[in-house]
Length: 445
Image (cartoon, rainbow, N blue to C red; front, side, top):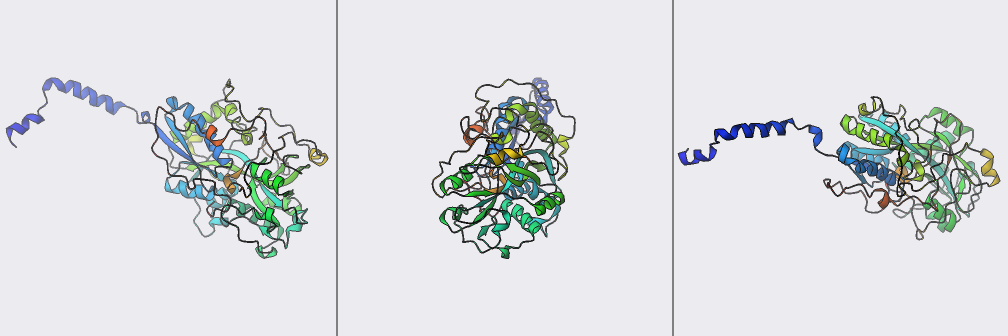
């Protein structure tokens, strides 16, 4: 090498102590100093999974100067789509319908023939969502047994709707051939047949009150049909991921009585490979701000630390294992106290729904402003219902319904306003699977 070139490689000896100190300081920085990013896979934009994910992100981002964790929300086609995205690493957290989660972990149901997924880990159990049976105004359906032989939409193949309705069919001893073939629905609009007379009944997994159902019951005079009986009792005994529930009275036009059914729960899950520190941060932020979290959407109002303890469908994530911090008192700003009054529900009064008295869980939902043909959200992320403060005992009904009028829940954009703080710009999140709600016919749910 030419001597002149060697001059550029020469470092004065007087600079060595300074350079060594600089390198030592850089190497000594903790790995956790770099901000981490998580994306939560949710559901349709007009569902409850999406604002629930937004509520989680809002709390995480409000405190990201301390926890160094930045959160974004991704709208998806629902539970099955979230499982696929989770496996690919496109998202780090996911909301999954409890029965779909069970089948994924056991290689059954929609996952029959596949190896059980042993990498799924639970964080929290959140709200309930009920299997809901809607009948058209022109049908003579008044009980569950009346749907046999009718034109019934069971939900899209490989969807959360279909997983729950198929369990019902099995319990009743029915096959798809037990029903007349329903018409082919246009994409994203499978329930409009309840309005145009081409469909007699349809199943969907949703929470209550629900603006999409409010549209169908108001604009089209669709009716909620109870899902109850001896076969349902046996179903609940056989499958612990289902719970008995009750849709509160007077939530929809013409619905003066409570409606019995059964429900799944929304589970917040991750892969076992997600760093424990990240999971611990999510856990601490949610538990320390639980009161604020439960006021960010009506579906979350009755959550407690006890009710949020995930069951044994899948193992808990190691980051959830150590002792949880106690719930800290908080004072909420007026902007944070949204959606609900914050009061805890009273015990379910089975007779109230029959007398037409307002449900203690919610107020009547007004007719949706959706245009004719408005669709309901995608199944697993679609809507949510409310678990009781204590674990649900077998045979105990959980009445559902939260306020959507008056002090209504904020829009998804309001809930997720804290997703991407101005002081730090997260890397581009994977594009949502749909720019607009996909409806509940999306095949990957």
